[in-house]
Image (cartoon, rainbow, N blue to C red):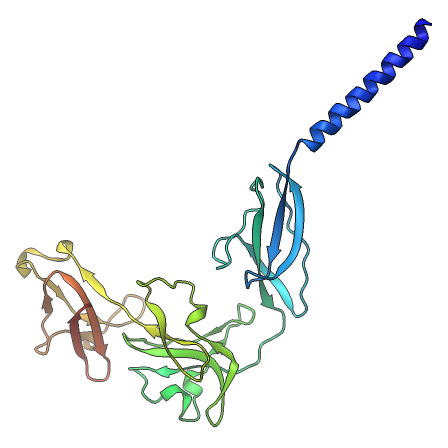
Length: 268
């Protein structure tokens, strides 16, 4: 009799412990992590995890592409931290990069103060404005140019006869910094391929930029050179060759490289 009661007691305890364990398991809330395409709308994958746990990088595939990275914002600027505990429903945005070699002739085209011969690619050939493929980075193209305030341009695939590929154009929508104070902003539009990239830069002079000998003004010249070295003939100031003198304030300063004339206007 005693043995039978003991067996029943042990069975009851086992049931109670199992129920308590299940209760603990069901008491841990779960959260959902949704992985989106870089458009910020198209969901690729959803994963449920217990609140307070981390999540591993999923194995995602896309034909013709490799994963460039996972990001916490749709702008693809803040990398997603996979070591951070997930405590609420979370969105992760996936950036892709093509794994196919890009052989297209990318070209800089625009209305450029220093390169009037560019003329948005109308004059052919445009070899001087073709981007060069980098030997150190996959599908990376570079070009070195001098840009001036008011210049507008795009980087596009343009064929002979002024043939724009409207599906292959890098415009202002691709700029990472879209703030009002950015050096590169949205401009007009060419061939309905998106807003041109426009160069706009202002300079603000403060009291700290003045000197004892300037009587409260700011003295400056415009220069251009390479690696911190500037030849004597590449210093541009007032018409008499002296420093340009302005009051403390914000200005738009433009150097015409063809004439060496510096234009200074108060910023609006």
